[in-house]
Length: 178
Image (cartoon, helix red, strand yellow):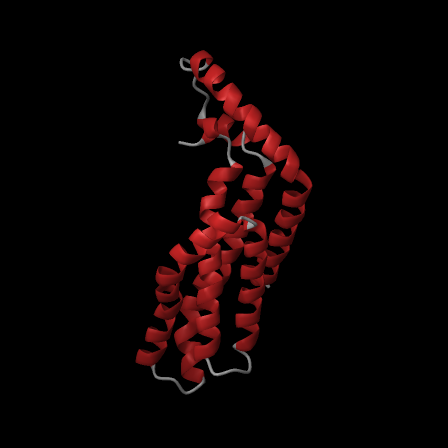
């Protein structure tokens, strides 16, 4: 259910991204022009911690929900997976090794996927693909040998970690980054 929620949030992000793609490009150009003016004017002004949350845009909050859903589906599964694997006849040692597979795949694939997305663009489309991979892997746990879905889960996890975290800095204005 959480994976489906994550997928829905990715679709919403995809729609917003497509609608606002041109306006975002124009806003970034305007922002770069105005940053030099704003930096000289606002060096003495500081805003409070709670006030800074009000300045974060809608895309940032969608990313927050997406991160919560993504990790909310992976982490509980990690905690319960040894019992799940044991019920399928896999020893606890092998089950523990299986749970390292998504992180191992992420360690190797994240830089490659990150480079690919930086070169091609289409971050939201890749996030959508990652969501589909997540849903596919969790569905496969029902009927497939557990090693196959855990490998697929690792690929989906890698999509999110390589694309989502860097995207947050793109969704937040430079003056709010710190």
